[in-house]
Length: 236
Image (cartoon, helix red, strand yellow):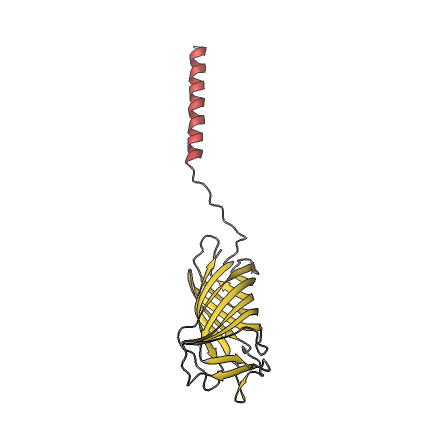
């Protein structure tokens, strides 16, 4: 009798242990939420480039575009982490098709600026390569569980124009200029970005002209203030 009772108790104990293990195994895994998340740290942008503050005879022609990419360190400043400061480093490639001729005097090597209004040519554009440092104030509706949210980012973009090429082509003639004293290589611009999830509209307006006051056409300043309109895509 004692042996029978002991056997029953052992079976019952094993059954209870198995049931507890099965219940534990059936419980869903807990999702770990990153309460210290950061947003939008890498960016890629494409823009349509415009020029303002042009002399009367200078105009754009064809398509002028830009490619922009970089990294921004996202630094939330509130507990919810939907308000942040962004500081980063990036690269910007810009092409401007227009009718501003940039040449050089053979004897003095002085830069010449003139209009191509009544001149036949196949290509006339200048290309810029800029190293940039974006500084942004960021507001968004983000939460740790999803990367789909509304955003509004605004700030300044400081940069150095390290490479400039002006390229003029005719059927039997080509003129290239890269070293221009009148070029303002230090760049500063205002930026504004807004959107939801993947698609975000991006605006940039330069706070200084591309050329200094020494660049003139018939006594009028060349100036040229770049602006950009396009899309920017953010990646964590």
